[in-house]
Length: 583
Image (cartoon, rainbow, N blue to C red; front, side, top):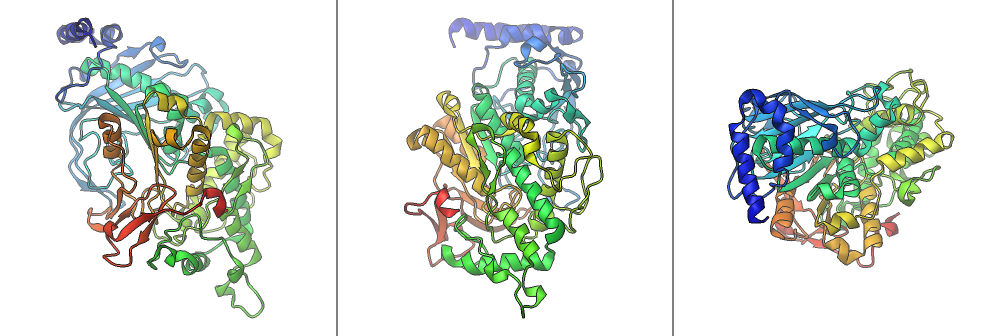
């Protein structure tokens, strides 16, 4: 930045400082054109210049990189600090500092599409010059504002005792994905569906940049994106579709094969109608996996470290004459387990050459207490054979079954009366192919993101039963095949915390934000064996640690030392091994 630019930034700051309060709303957009280039990294924390006066400000559609009817700030006020507390689920939440909370909406072009509602959290006195956008989760619709949620609060996959990004000085922001929760009428609008797919990410980011400039007098020096689960799919789409907008991305447990994942899960739903597995049957499946594969990593501790290599051999569990029913699985139950674990050949060609879904494979934690089969896969009772018309969300059923039902009914068929049982994807080939180009985060060509210096960290716990590690492994393999190993190594790291579940259960809490900061800001390449922690969500107490080895290596017990400590393990390679060998 030259002297003239520096002077312009200083002059713009003086102008903003002397604008009369009553005129701020009208001049917000004019100020953007003066100071849009003032992205110099602050040498010290920056205090906010405007908060309450932003209320009512309008951001013209020309300032947003995709078609909209502009945006408006509905409210802007100082939100008080939140003291540490324990939520209704028993999770201990850290202090959240006072901040300027900006709420608003981005108006759609299509009258049938809902507005995109956004929330921006602005540090009052310690802005570090960076911004962090967070993705949503599930089927979207939840505005990310509350202390518990990721825009202003707990940051997965970081250890639960680490200060939140807003406490560290980040501007944090997110949206509701452009639609209300637990609904489906909006899905009939293609604009609303494209917003959910990825367009709202760009629109929300552009609006957030305008608000940040108006609040502080400068743009951020760095913009990061973080997401988990469906939000991690958004994180990957951010890097794939909008590479110039982000300096770094963290994607944890991404549902990247969005369409194939849901179509495969719908097959599982159909098979569970007759092959439901109760608690005892699920324990039988998990016990068998651990008995066959647990010790292969040098330690029989209930955690399968050789992820993706434990075969789905169900022969020993198949009911035979003379075997007690409680000690075996019926043919229908075997079919259900196979539908979850084994690859699914997608009957419709998908974007980026995807022809199959790799399946969840064997995790050894199917009976885990937190976020495993009973919550995500089987549920507490079988899914209905004939699903009642409407939303299609059944209580007490597996979460991924409900996601699948919603997607085939409202995303693909756009018919609230379609029954998921017997659903034939071939009848909707055109629609599925279109949705795949919008939603599926499977593009292996990240050259534009890499060329602009972007860094990507993917984290996927090995015992994730809500979206499979195998899909992330396949994706990273394809990135390497497309871009080459050396080029990939310059911008991408993929870590697998073993035994961890969806929503960073188990030993899978990783200081990802610090790793990304060090890589992007200081050019410090992340370790091949960062430490992952299992800290109690109730009080933050240490329970275990283990290396989150860089894929495809795995943590092997050295044969001595505390089995609860990471230093007792080493990351070992698999000679000549690739993901394809493990199918």
